[in-house]
Length: 116
Length: 114
Image (cartoon, rainbow over all chains, first blue to last red; front, side):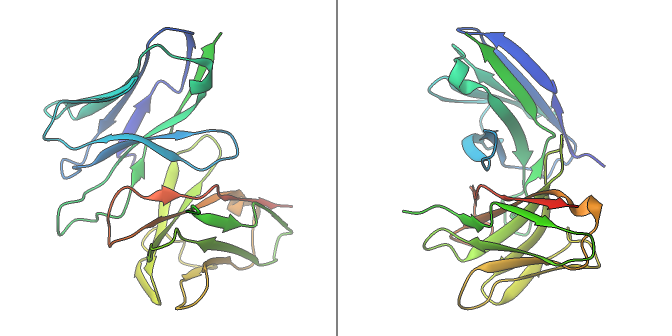
């Protein structure tokens, strides 16, 4: 049972373009939605995260859009750069008291390639 | 401030041998989480430990796998009698407080079974 579905599996974008990665979740108890960036041979690094009380969060060129009713959230990378080429993972967990707030449930990842 | 340290970075074992993976959390962090990443897959939760306690091992295979986080020293993920299907990247993460996000990840141990 895959609780977090991520698409696309791979994405090629030209330098300066917008990269968009989508995730959908099933468990309505999830209330913390981070995105992680992973370079080859490295561990995942937190990029940006959102709680469901807001519909959008922006940090620099990275924006998360969150649609609670549709149970979907997405990562937008503006002005994509070759250095952004990496695998991106969405994840979800439950952080409110009483939940399994330590288990991150990950999507399968999106391999982003930004061409110069 | 050193991050989460995992060693070895690469480990090769033959079928039937034992594999020991070590994880030292970030300074000030007393909560450790282990995840496994199979090729072309996302990370999957295995176990959550605090010092000297296993809090949740619901993601651990029932046999051959065990984890510990002693009062002194790193957390250890132990795989006995390894099989080809154990080949994966194993990541450790840590956090300062119980269940607190974000979790900070190490660079993983790539386990290869011959």
